[in-house]
Image (cartoon, rainbow, N blue to C red; front, side, top):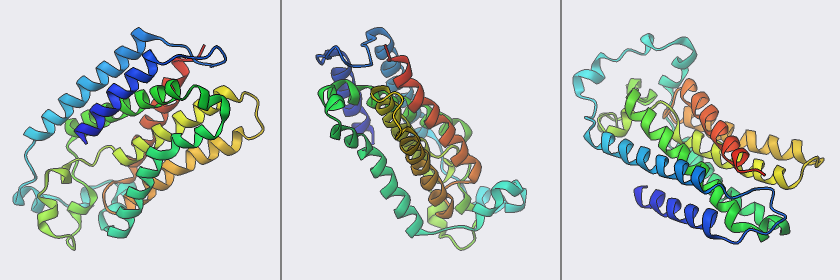
Length: 243
């Protein structure tokens, strides 16, 4: 994941600041702002990974002390969920979110500004990863499956088992889908297809969050928070680069 993030960072910076931007683009290059967001995101990602590396896994005594009745009623339903099929489905949706910006290349006007488009969406991705990783290591919330007696103990004793809040799958897919929709709408103001585009953008991360809960990976509050953060960043980054 670290190498993937680094590649995305440098590619985003190159495309956003070095590509030739035709005059008809609804976006402008804001070098200082873009460098600030991307650079700050890289620092945040590095801090997050460093803290995660130092973070201890849950001990057996800590696991045995967990009681699902201490979980709020709103979240408690997730503590009895565990499904590898649901996890696989959520992974497929995550990679679909990564590929979603490719759909924009079907539009000739956006395709002419492909470098700028991918630079903006890449910046949204980096900012979302940074926010997600920092919050995860700060909160250290055990995942729902840790409360489930049917889940193997060795899975509960992995470091990842205490990184529940908030959902990275949901936040990432929300950022990718909302930034893709925001870029599309910037080129198609007043289009009758706007409602359809934004509905699709809203449903993809919602489905991702649903399957993360069914997989026992996240509580409902985890996916709601991840959805909100990813959607805000995904909408906000293209907005600040608009002319």
